[in-house]
Image (cartoon, rainbow, N blue to C red; front, side):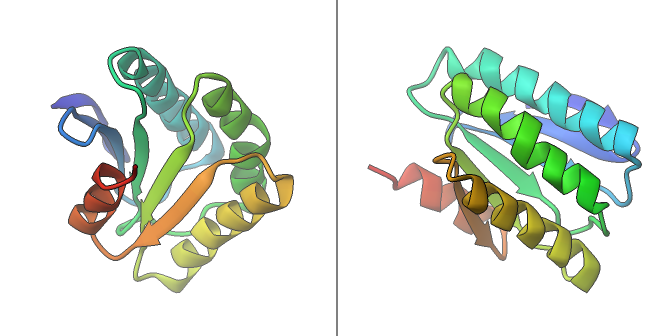
Length: 137
């Protein structure tokens, strides 16, 4: 179910997983990126009320580079709010673009360094990411 759409991204809800899928459609400036992720977090928190656990699934397959300050913001600001709401799982569908791929990996590294218990996994496609989360015990 589509929840939100802008030229630079779409947020969708799939109750069967359950997850909020954030599809990135290219470059986002910092304001757009943060607005989009905050909007997604609002939906995650809302839908989490109906589920024991929920996945943030970032389809970055069409995303390009995101500045380091933004990936750091996600680890320092977005993750703690997600964790406080009981959201512990993030999955990425990786971009083919080497620079976009580097942005995703920087986020994962920043999250790991913080030791904040956010489980971050990377996949080649949406189906595999969704299956991973469905099969978690």
